[in-house]
Image (tube, rainbow, N blue to C red; front, side, top):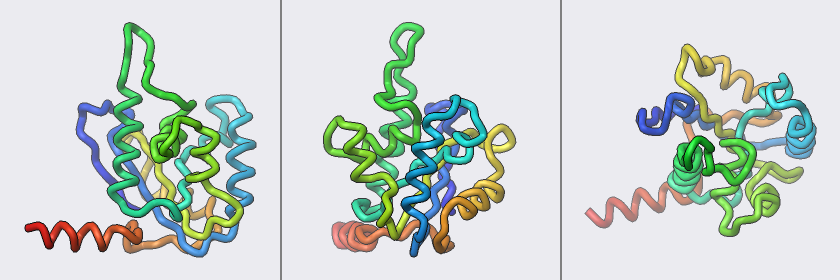
Length: 175
C-alpha cells in the first residue's frame, strides 16, 4: 500500500491518501454487490465504513498520475464552499467523487460502470482518503481491512500501471 501525505491546505479530514493494488481479483461481483448494499444503509453504519474506499478497476487507469489527478480534483471539490454550504461534490462521498472525476463526462452512473469494480475486474485499485493517525485509520489495520475485502493478490511493490514506465521514459528523454 502507498501512503501519500497531502498539504494542510486540503483540510485535516484529507491529510492522507492510501492506495493499494490487487491483482488476480476473484470477487469483483461480490464487491460490487456489497457496495450497492452498503449504499442503502445509514450514513455511519458499519457496512458503509467497511466499504469506504474508491474501488477503481485498473483497466482504464493508464498511470499513477492519472489516478492522483482524480484524487486531487475530488479533494479540491470537497473544499469548495459558497456561504455556509459546501458546493463542490457532485456525488455522495469523496470516494465516489474520485470515480466521477476519472470519467470524461458528467454522468456518475457511467463513471461507476466504466471505472468502478465489476464482475470481470482482475486488477483493482483501492483508494482511501482520511485524516492522519491517530484520528484517522492505522495504516497497518487499513491494509489488513483492504486485504480482507478483496479476494486477490495484494501488490506489495506499490502501484504499478502500464503508463507509468512510459511517462518516466518520456520525462527522462525531455531532460
